[in-house]
Length: 89
Image 1 (tube, rainbow, N blue to C red):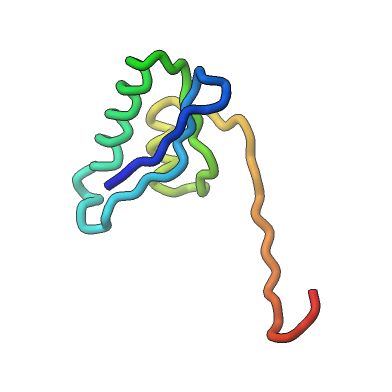
Image 2: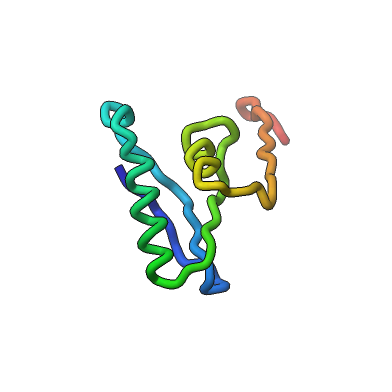
């Protein structure tokens, strides 16, 4: 598994962007273990908060964030339109 997180521009928070665990290992709660490791590492380095960016609703990542007592601070929507072959937009 892996977790990608970067320092935020404010230098007081980190942005958690992407995490994944191979399907055959998901039953071992490795995502939670990696997330806990990040939490304590960030806290020991002086970060005051973390931001979980661009999360799908009702998926495993959002459930993990909720377990860590996060709150929604902003919501986005994605829009899509099917482009017909050779047609104009």
